[in-house]
Length: 332
Length: 192
Image 1 (cartoon, one colour):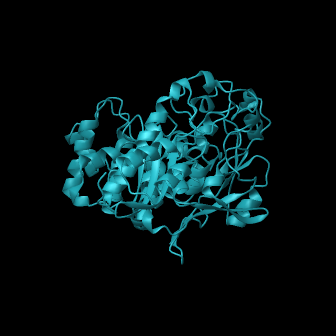
Image 2 (cartoon, each protein chain N blue to C red):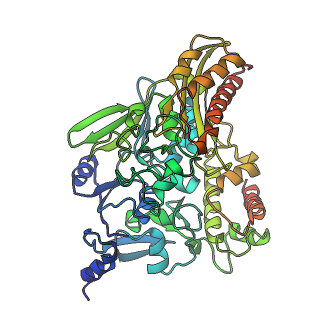
Image 3 (cartoon, chains in turn orange, brown):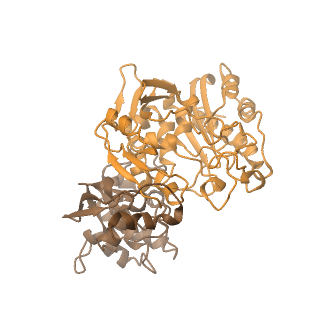
């Protein structure tokens, strides 16, 4: 393990100034960064500790939305009574991820910036990984593809984004707040993560020296009727094979509005806009939900090792929709 | 040999140009005692506890946050000490298994693990016990888990499913899980 310099940031401006050092990286919870550091995959020269910045608050906004500080831990957000009441899907996503020990350390900002758990990326014994070493190839293409992407992949990378939280945030129209050397800016969560295309080594649109300061949730009254369904190989402490975040605005048996996002299927949280459009204004029925499920995986391009995920994702969408409808007293 | 030369030699095998970051002064408050240390920033809290302070009750299993053997409490919250740097915990209140009870006066959770036979080889036990002690506090605070139905936990009706879910970050390769759950449940019921 290479040597690392360490400095604790006093405030956001100090953090951004320190981040201009060559090889600098922010550290929040450190759960992913230090894991990858031990494998020699992340090679920070200078760690800027942002974990004690005053960015851990969870505040109600005047418009009825919620501002979640980037240093709020997964535990703090997942167990927050207001989050559980108004944005249930976000709490469920967070509490279904990792373990209490990890959730107590992991932060919202770090969660968004965590790297893929593709085995060929996390194990340096594999020499071909375009995400680790641009231009080296992709061992997953001929390897075990159980956890890999079925949507939006490129011939250079079929890795998936591992975050549960980000899938819920995608469904909730969340906005990421950034601050960097050139000031502040906001990026919709759905545009924050990238598809791999020709540059799988770049996960997100964040720029050098930029710090995530907060994530804002717009008011969405119907997000009380929401659910996160995580399908995985173990009942607890496993990454999603497929996951679905759903929020439904129901008026009797009519779907006024819908939000659907999928996890475990792409290099980024996957918003199923076509499925949402198909539900909007329609009376729910088993046939309608089945069509929405099919629309959610439209365009899927599976590999031999993950072809099962197309059906799994389709059915998971149906199940998640059923769960929300039944929780609100509907029958389907 | 001067310190910095040693550092350069240590990392020579990696053929990296990364310069050597020397030890930094640091105060760790562990089990109520204050320790003034000089530690390299790259040293994890786990390695500082075991290798520098010789508090070897905290175990190194996977060293990757997967097994929970290294679980300690920081300001009352359980964390994996292998995935955090010692230097990040300057001034924080750290509790290890050595701080929970004494040989002749074990913590109620330690006593329950003995009474319920909640272990075989014992390697995961300090982590299990630390985790379970933190769990008691999380229950008092009514923290929800992924299997909690309502907005907050109803401590009076804590199920074994709740305990299993909340302990999923502590692996036991001997498979003592049924008795670990029993031990924790017995303490929860007594404290309810």
